[in-house]
Amino acid sequence: MMDEMERRRRTKDTAKKLFSTLKGGVGFDLWKKFDAELAKELSMFYTGVLYSREVIPQKTRELCACASLTVLERGNELRAHIHAAMNVGATRAEVAEVIFQQVTYGGMPVVVEGLQRLREVLLERGEWTD
Image (cartoon, rainbow, N blue to C red; front, side, top):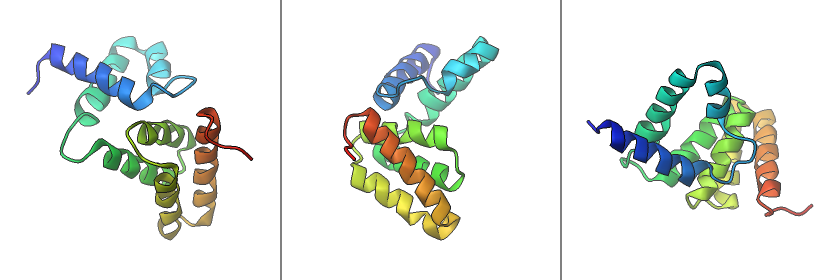
């Protein structure tokens, strides 16, 4: 079990690594407007404990998140985790492939929506031209 200082450090380091390129904030920014203390606890668990685990590589974890969020049609969260996946080394081709693979589980409409989120992220990052 890690101590409080270690959780805070891991939360900060992991959040920076994953979400530093995300414009417009992440869920935490909204959560804390409603309950700052609960938002802090949630962030420290998700980012400082769960997302910072080393059981699987961070890139794998983020590609899994992209797959799940695509099928669940959670566009805002998918956008955040596409940024995170690319921030930890996933290529645009890898993210696109993960999204395409979800056709089996969610159908073509979720793939189209997922690819639209990927395109938005690539535009934000200056990595897409029409």
